[in-house]
Length: 88
Image (cartoon, rainbow, N blue to C red; front, side, top):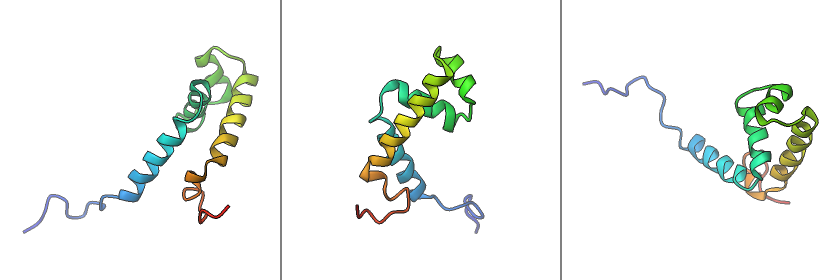
């Protein structure tokens, strides 16, 4: 007897956990920083496209991206996503 899930990829609990960790990390950013990162890296828009949507300059998108990524790099809870063992 076959299951409707035969041949389907197993549920990836690790992917869910990574997604939840990333969502929690993004919540620690300002709204503008979060919007810039989502548009640039999740929606795969150019700096110019993101700037147009947000009504800001390309320079603002660049600076907000830089600051937001730096803040994310400082979060110890994301060490696992970066492949670090948590030792700082």
